[in-house]
Amino acid sequence: MQRENILLDKGIIGLALRPWGDPAAAPIDLYRRLLKELEARTGQRCVLLPMHHPDDLDFARRISPEKQHHLIEGAYPPNLVLGLVSKMSTVVAMRLHALIFAARAGVPPFALAYDPKVRQLMKLLGLEESTVDWNGFDPARVAAQVADTISHRIDAVTRLREQTIGCEAAALRNCDIALAVLGA
Image (cartoon, rainbow, N blue to C red; front, side, top):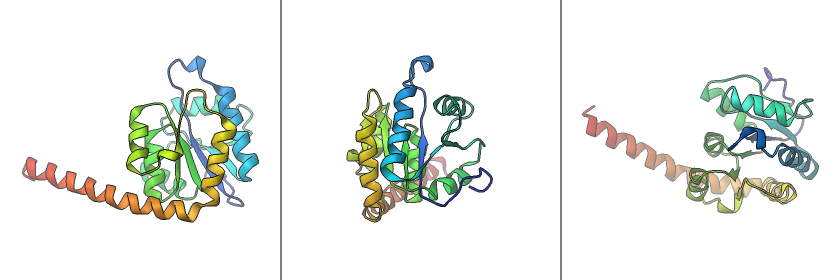
């Protein structure tokens, strides 16, 4: 956070957005309205979190050309991205890995679903109510849902931690099975 000059004087909402389909047709104004609505409803700082460099970084610059919102510029290894995410109140994301990192860090994720894999993850986490379709979403409605999640953050984190324990155990079983098959 210090390297990226992100102040921790108030809560932080991370946003991992991406172009989908034709990048020139991306709903930039819709994303800009979402950032404004989130800040207005929550009083927190929105931070753009590019997960796929350089594409997401270029896209984030289009969303916030005058840097009205903070943009994490660096391309960091997963452990540092996880550390960044762990300092956030919530993560609003289209990127699957941003949602996974949020869940792993115990930070409530909110998905703008563009692909079935995003919906499947949120279902696995028991967070279907924190998922909306990215195409034509209502920024005010999403901001209200995110604000509600933040206001009930302790409950959301508790539920999330309960769900991720089972997911981690299943992932470790899969690793054991793979190692047994490989004879390692």
